Length: 106
Image (cartoon, rainbow, N blue to C red):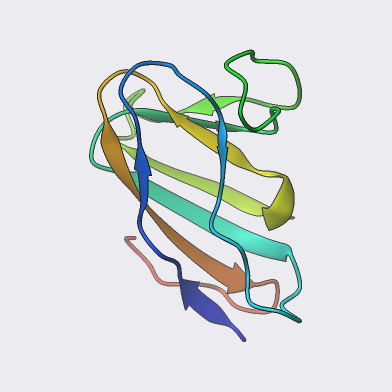
């Protein structure tokens, strides 16, 4: 599978608990290029799901001159966690296999 548009993920208001991304289909390589777009500011990182603490990995926040979009590059999909950075928001997730360039402008 090359390109996957994943199920929309709803993030609760406030800088609450970290949540995992929707599960990949069986047999899909988790090393993928990940593009995230939210309707409001959100954070992405490698933190413990179910907890609010920023406790591991690199944290990125959308909205710093980039709108509500993050392109994480090629990373292990299964290790990424996300949370709202303020208001409740919907998060849209698009991933690509490492051999694909992906679309321009997502």
